Length: 502
Image 1 (spheres, helix red, strand yellow):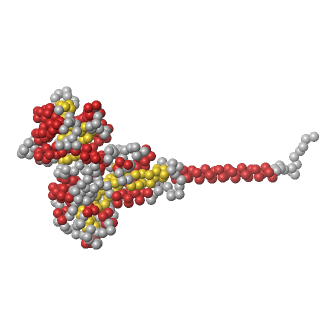
Image 2: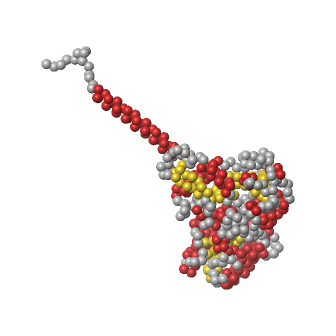
Image 3: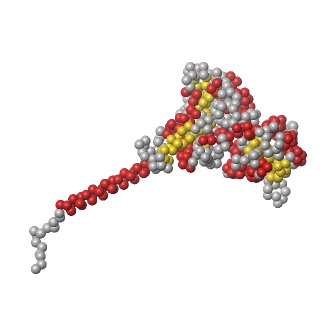
């Protein structure tokens, strides 16, 4: 007989079954809590500013940074490291590197010294374009004999101040104290072999000098030095992870830097009016570069030369790349007085080419301008291949002028040709050199600097003697181991003999 349900009947569970259910629920809750905490930890590790106690999955990573201003750079590194940066699961620590060759980043005053220091160390920027500004300092007068800032005289005659060759402030202070770029350049020339640490009187300096144990500093109105940071290419010493961290480091510094124009007082211009304009030292720099015999291949102590300097000034196989555009038919300073730019260049090449061969090296000659004949597309001509310099000395005197200077096209073609020659058997142990004599650039390529570096590699040296009336192309300054602005025919001959090692 079947059983029937009665109100008194209820489902019964054992005590063990209930305990099992509770245990399962507790385990599920614990698992969910662990997953939430783990997710939060991963989110923290993916940022570039973790806590000190966080665990970096990939461990620690050192980021070596070289600089032309140790005091400023140490401050930048300390500030960035204090944010406890984490990049791609690495805890990154920026450290000072003594040598650009072992660095992932190079920081220096934004001046002609910056890229030449990188080139001298046989390094290259990881990217083309203008290096970002990351810091700035007021520039002015440092007096080692002054006890307080108020005792530092800023109304001094320009020639009463020292302009040390290793001071980032020399050009801008010369701009502030002189009315003429030529006069400022002469002061830089006068003191280019002195060093700031040896100053025994008022000297051009940046604000960091005020931290010295002795002496005091006072800013000049509108005088300011900006610093740029360059991420360097990977090398045997710098791997891919350090290169990535370097880019984050530079991007962070650039984002935090606001520049002189936005807040001059905050950037150290304590005596400046709110509408103070920043002084531009470009004209003094250009006038100085046109006269100095230094190559600016280092950003270190004035009066010293690196191995790269010595190699640059040693004679080697040389290709002369000569601008023969219309502008070369004019005299220097665009006058009819004296020889034309072309004639001065031809005479200088003719005088030097045989001497290069007498020293055991070959000489080649190309000239360039825009095509002058119908149907011709190429703007450069291969006049003489690598051979005895006597042939070049003869041929260079027979060229004419016309058209516009297609400098980028000609220089890229020449760099390919010289690199091939340098790699050949007859030149295996002698890296060759291009000596470019140019009046301007009518065909600026957006990516020229990187294209040239790719074409030239490490087998080609470039010296540029600029004879134009306008400013040299910035890309030429960037890629040349030596750049000089020439103002006279005599200066051209002297400079040419020096850059070919004679």
